[in-house]
Length: 331
Image (cartoon, rainbow, N blue to C red; front, side):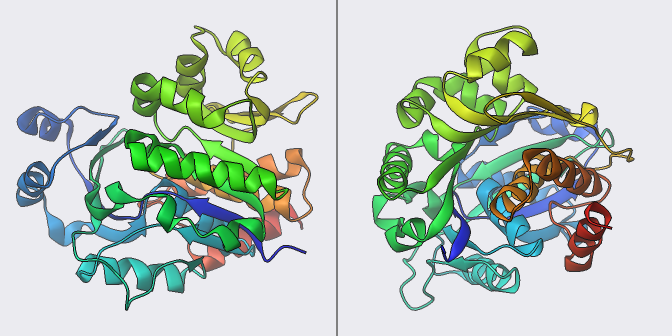
């Protein structure tokens, strides 16, 4: 028996989420719909023009959201990350503790610096646009990987955003190798179309011969494979992933279980905020496959959970909502 269902590695960011009009992007030269890395000066300039009183603050980062979801559904998860010895770093640690996720953060050993922040701008069409200042998480490296936690996990979950730095990429490769040497399965998420577009060689390097599980949305799947339709892209993905999930937004998702493709139906919802939908899908799905559910059942749970997430503001369920979704899955 392994102690953890999923150990995640990725960026530690405090998400500051707020609603904007499309005009906000024009006025402030923000590219809509993407995650853009910015420096602290640029992020502070944006902070000055938003209504912070209405902003929602939570610990986040792609893989952080996923391992929190695993925990909320009743799984056991661990997160390996890096924050600074500042107010937001302490906020991140407290929020992780409240979410029931074990982690490598020691309040007495935090380095001086600035904890990463992600400004999440949500428009009326429910699309999320992110401007991220990585801060100290940009120095996340092999030294921050908790080897014992990985060895004691069913799955290692790797966040694709780490490919933007050489030290992050080295940490991804190290964690993957360690997992494989200890019989731990490896899952990876591409995280964002921009990551695939600009860092494909880095992904090739990390993936190597293959991963056990890959998460991608339609755009990422086609960008990575160089195909212009999903049917060809999914065949190409078989070459690098033993199993994979392609999320399709309002059209549900497609799962390859190693033998066949499984179509996952969407759940009707009114979308107001797409932030965290992919992270939630991955978290619910990872909980399912590490706790005795079939791929089809895990996909159904993930679809239900992500449909709930897009119907509300913020990337995280409340604890009672996770229990209610599980109850709907197993009436």
